[in-house]
Image (cartoon, rainbow, N blue to C red; front, side, top):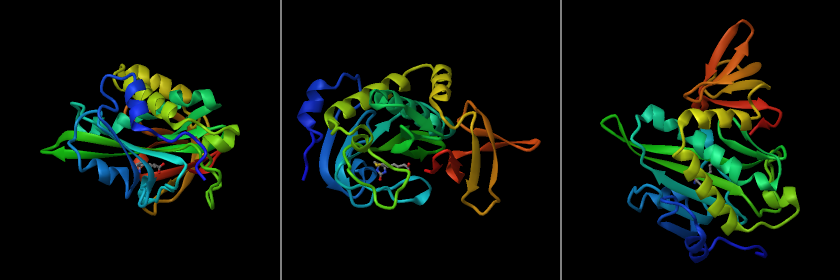
Length: 258
Ligand code: BTN
């Protein structure tokens, strides 16, 4: 039974306070993935697709993203004039925007690279894809899955929802507006200032992590001592300093491999 306020296109359109994010915005009941659905539209900056369910939700490192009723699944386009390398760093302002949008629900932090953790549990994941022509970025498509009103997670011990963690159903319209507004604010801000704030929100920084490579290289543990301007995690491994890129590892810290 659905007993919470579900995303409503008209409500969001009349309340959203942004220049370009969510303009236009389309909401669907069920899609394979919002990444597939948004590909049917022009790659215009800010164009946003939201679904109430996905049948083939995709996560980082080739994993599935559980996409049942109760969550919000969104993708939007950004069209920055950036090289593909720089454009790949856009998940930094996006993660910061989401963390700020959700901080009224509890202790909301970022687990590097872009998991959003509320009171110690993962409630949101971010993944981006990119269109490149002749070495230039045509668009970046950011996908965000937010666990809002689910009441259980089977076989996902580190996942939770805002509803489970706060004990209250949450209003999806309010959350969608907040997220789009906060992401826009961070996206147009100064890159250096964003990174400083990202670091302040990042619970991985300063903690001991285990780095698990997906390509068979040996795992190692060490203290995370910094995050570089391009978003690499800097981990002390004995006398060595290792620069870790998000595409090739999962990082286990306090909250497991989430
Ligand atoms: C992660 O693994 O943490 C990233 C998860 C990203 C999930 C979102 S849900 C909306 C968009 N569509 C998808 O298929 N995946 C992303």
